[in-house]
Image 1 (cartoon, rainbow, N blue to C red):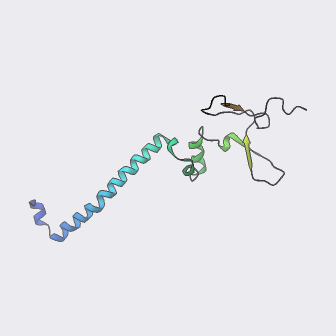
Image 2 (cartoon, rainbow, N blue to C red):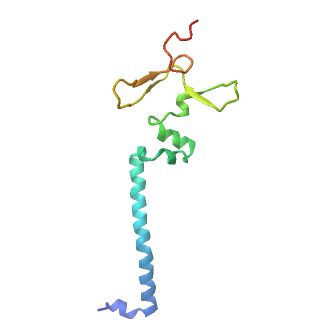
Image 3 (cartoon, one colour):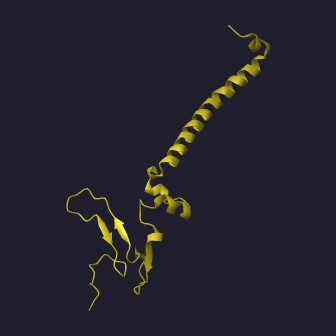
Length: 125
């Protein structure tokens, strides 16, 4: 049973509108899923996997990684004399907390005056 409005349209128009609906419905569904995904990542940015985080713009990546991963803001570049790759170490006096599940493991480390995690007085000669 057709509606009176449907009966007045030519057959080609009805087919075109039906085809348009066939294309629009999946696109609208996909848009809804992407919006929900975007909102979820904005609420919980920690859900962004580390490999994907590497693709982000450096400023945004630093904001998202702060507290979750070591960032260059917490590190300093150690000058090398052996032409090796860059070596980033903690800034002097910085404390870093680690959540290890094993009993007896170190959970907090404080960098010494050089930036390594040696005992106080290790460099006194």
